[in-house]
Length: 109
Image 1 (tube, one colour):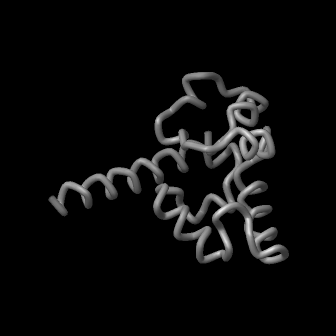
Image 2 (cartoon, helix red, strand yellow):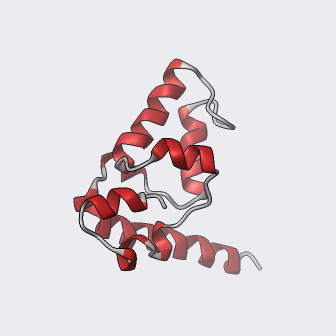
Image 3 (spheres, one colour):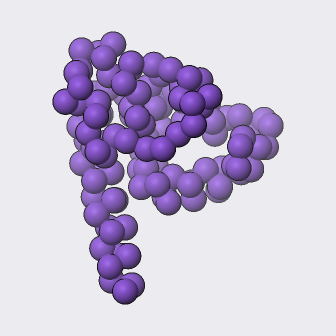
């Protein structure tokens, strides 16, 4: 979950909210545990800050790598500002990005 299940539950949202397709992403268990119940604005900012300090997190070496990874996974750049109040807007924004990517794939056939 991009908006973690525990985070959404903590704010009173249930399964019908947190299991939306536009909220799902593949992530390894250690990263998922580290994210915990944090808002996306908190953990995405922490990743960007860590890249500035350390220079490498997993396969990411720079903020440009982070931006490219986000684009590949249809995660809007505005995620750095998103908390629970922006969840529905995030879903709409990500669905539009996902649809654009699918249209691009089909257009390339």
